[in-house]
Image 1 (cartoon, helix red, strand yellow):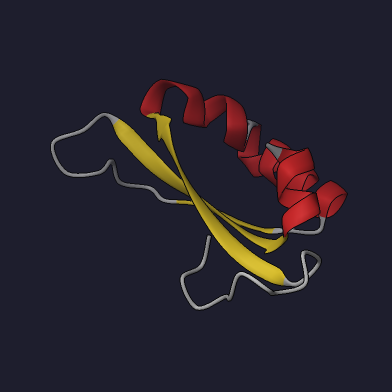
Image 2: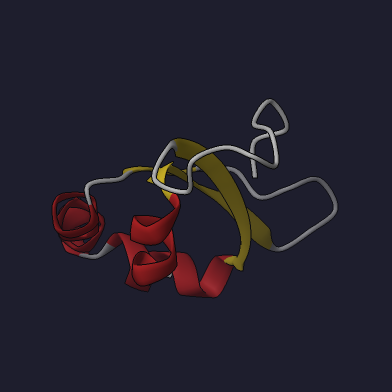
Length: 76
């Protein structure tokens, strides 16, 4: 969760979560032509960014979700 938010923040306020996802699953999350990630953005009203490069010395990529906590939980 974004470090700038306080513990007393409204749970419906926007925050950010970054997930480490194995490279082999990223294609399924993105979908053909980015269609699946577009559907996730619209359905859950989130900003979703899938980083194109793997993390250093890793086979994992970062997926960044930004929006309301409840929407992120449903999306995940």
